[in-house]
Image 1 (tube, rainbow, N blue to C red):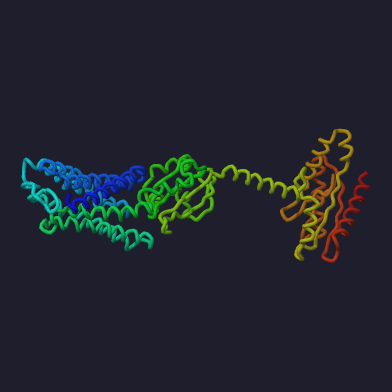
Image 2: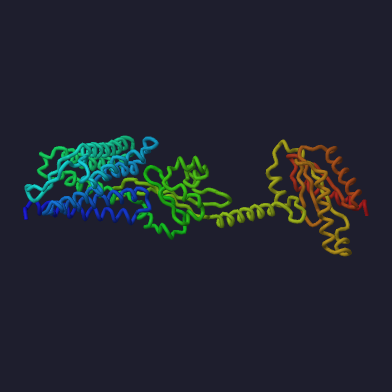
Length: 493
């Protein structure tokens, strides 16, 4: 066997194996939309490479034609799929309506013409077997459609190269390096196709096939070290499918590319927005902005549930950011417990300064109130109230009746006071009213109102009063009001 043929055979066999591995890897990770496109490309490349390998080692015209036709099961469509891979990678939008139909017309016509070449001469006018430099080879006389297909193929791959190049101009540094490698990978098949237009320069070798493995290696290196096929293997490292937290995976362009079961359980509508950009999703569902944390929240509330969030970057082996992993966990129960604790704390704080039975302020609050009096609060009027006959009521009617009498007395006191007055229960049957910035006349008027309302409601109590100035201590004023209350009590016996 010719040495050159041996080298080419080994070369294309290895290339075919690489293509098959490339295809299987994409198939395993086919949930990603770009992986599906790459799977098709890998399958077509593998088919064409192995077919050309067998063509190189064919000894009859029939075998040569068979394997040539086998190549054309894939060759017409490779440039188109190559272009679509560039669209998927860069998130390039389809240029115009109908593009997805028009772009397939020439490959389909080529496919039909090649496999019906015995009926016409549009693609090949003749095919003969000749002795090449290293083995038998096909000598094909090209028809006009061959050049149409070649120009089309060059145009598609050039288009893909331009798409990568334009993307590299506007993307981040890490993505730029990857895009530049893909530009380089796209140049090789383009050069191979160009050489195919000049058979006298190729010595019977199909250089498009020779250069294609170079592109596969470059492309594959990018794919397997970066993330184009799927970020899910990375996400699986943190128990993507079984995690007790929601996980949203966004690619480098902020497209939602994967959602784990926990996230779908909490937000079922996310499934229909896979492969949508975040900005577009927010247009449809504004609340998604909270889920992604665009408001930079550590937690958020959604439809009565509370979630704690965390956002982290996904990096490849080169240290480049290739996407983001947004996680959240339902902390509604924790939130409810915390709210209960807050309410309990508020209740405890309330009880610390209020009398539980009457709702009036207690002695503890009174001490703080006196300590924080301001000059404008003086003169401070003090009315001392002591209920009559509470012990008799408790003894004759029971403590429930006594408690009710205390509450009714407290309610009566509140009705004659305004928002600036302080009402305090200081003991079992003793109350205080503190009136800021008051006069003797103000105090006596309030005491008169108390007596009148008490008479109407059948309540009896004794009253005493005093006035505190800044120079007099509260204890002294308190004793004076208490003494006057006892004097009033003695008069009513």
